[in-house]
Length: 182
Image (cartoon, rainbow, N blue to C red):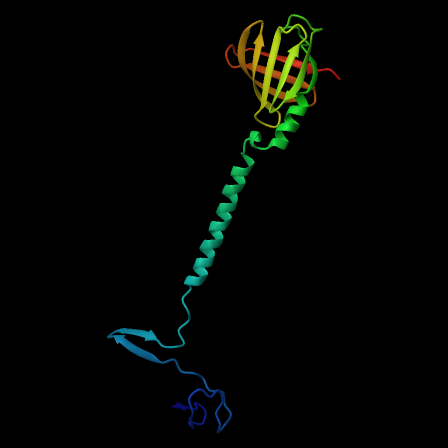
């Protein structure tokens, strides 16, 4: 049974207002003894915060996962994306020349690059130079250069502003360049 705290009238359980004076009835927390010295609150105990903690941990996990996936996606090799390979190889197609004459000992020799599948093949008309390039980045290529029967592995960087390819030999560590004929 419940008593009104204002007029001390006896009331039925669960009423919100006193039927005698109309005062609001405050629910008194009930306690029950579990162990001596330990008091546990009854029905009006606030719910555990574990649900909120679970949501917070889940949110942090989703954010962390987002950044991990983002890092992986931005580092994906261009060779997995055929559209990017095609664009990278299209930059190289066409006619090029050796502006210093270091490579072929002739500044007039034209090297023609053609796309063949996932690579670009470059050759001069005398067949003394053969270049095969594979895109490994937006403006970076790995390749093979065969000059007068001697082959060398190279890394090639394309520079848009100058329409220039810079070759770096992995074996001899020499470098040379080709310029695109406009």
